[in-house]
View 1: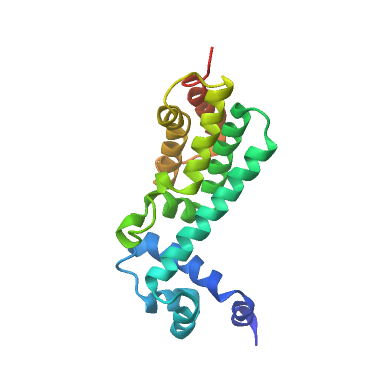
View 2: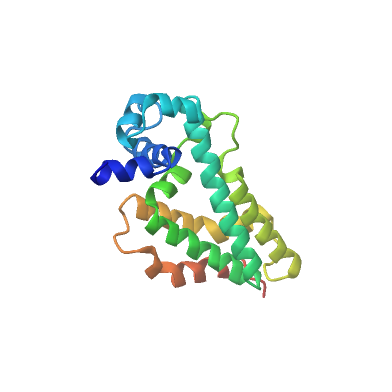
Length: 197
């Protein structure tokens, strides 16, 4: 074995496939991507792909579940380590901005893919576990009085909607500068919209 071929064989074929479909789904969309395309992009044989995932829908489901679980774990970790709801929500926004910069294909898949078209049994992304956790943090802030008494969906949308729109602008190439440069200003606007007092 030599060079990159040797390295590729040592890698996890499941992860190689998931990495490849992020690229392909962004470039071609789910429906225009074939198993053969995935095999070529990932370097994993068609047989191995079917063995690990069953079919293309199985790949998409695994990707969706893996990414929502990772994002949920990150939000839970943040919530457990930050004291105030203000600090938890700000750190969630910072983490989302950081993920956009370090893994734009992941954020693109999470925010732009029309998951219900190819995974009809999955919840819409705004009802998925990461977004439920974000609403739970906001609800706690309403309960403790850090966030004024308003509907939890209104408060959640006010806190996270603007930052998510900034993420989309970055993914679309509208924002050329890294999101970290906008964090303080975006967060200040978001928090002022819901802060008690």
